[in-house]
Image (tube, one colour):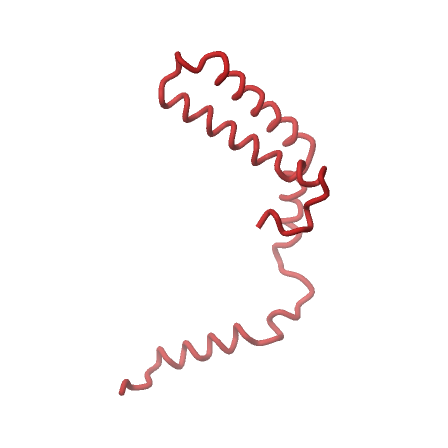
Length: 105
């Protein structure tokens, strides 16, 4: 049988601290206001216009110049298209009323 050592005691104390109800009963975490500002930036008009422009430019480049592009440029334009969709997804979900359904998780 293994001996009970300091690592086991430390693990038990850490587990008890993480499961304590006082830890989760706070009114808010310290970084919530910063995260709200960050999320507000990504749901604003600037990001919506920028991501829509990224989608339009990348689709246009794929449609009209697909054969003349190299592999790195195709990858960059594909990344631009994906970033445009990622910037627009929150606004599109807001438009269809699907933001509080857990679909972003």
